[in-house]
Length: 156
Image 1 (cartoon, rainbow, N blue to C red):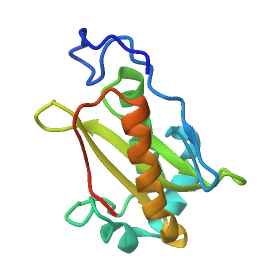
Image 2 (image 1 turned 90 degrees about the horizontal axis):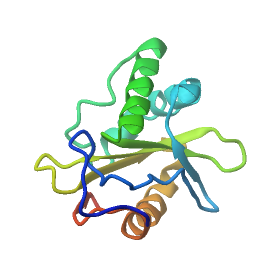
Image 3 (image 1 turned 120 degrees about the horizontal axis):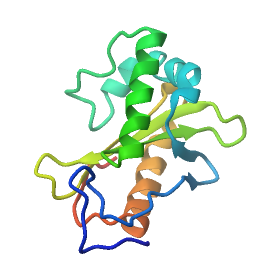
Image 4 (image 1 turned 90 degrees about the vertical axis):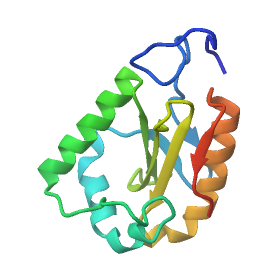
C-alpha cells in the first residue's frame, strides 16, 4: 500500500499519495471503478433486484434503490465516477468475470465523523449466493490495500 499517511487532502478522505486500487480479481467476480460505461448493465442489475437489495445489510433502511430512469441512473454513475476522480468516495462495480455483466456494487465513502470508511455492497438477486463471499473478499482487501484505520461494513 503506497501512501503518505502524515499528509491528507481536505477534499479527499484518503491520504495524498495513496493510489486507489484499479480493481480486484476473484474467481467469482471482478471489481472495477464504476462509470458511465456500465449504465445499461448496472441499471438492469439493480432494477431486477430492488427487493433483494433492500433486504441486504446496509440497505435495510435505505431509500435506494428507488425508481429511476436509465438517464437518472447515468447521472448517478457520473457522480460516482467524479467522486472517484476527486477521491471523495470510491464505487466499484461488481462484474461477472466471464461476461463483464454488472452483478453488484461496492461503495466506499467517508464515515460521518471523517475518521474512516463506511462500506456497503449489494449483489443482484440472481447472484445472491455471492453476497457473503463478496463481503469476505472486500473486507480482506480493505485491510490489505486501503489506508483506513476504521471501517464500518455490515457483516453477512
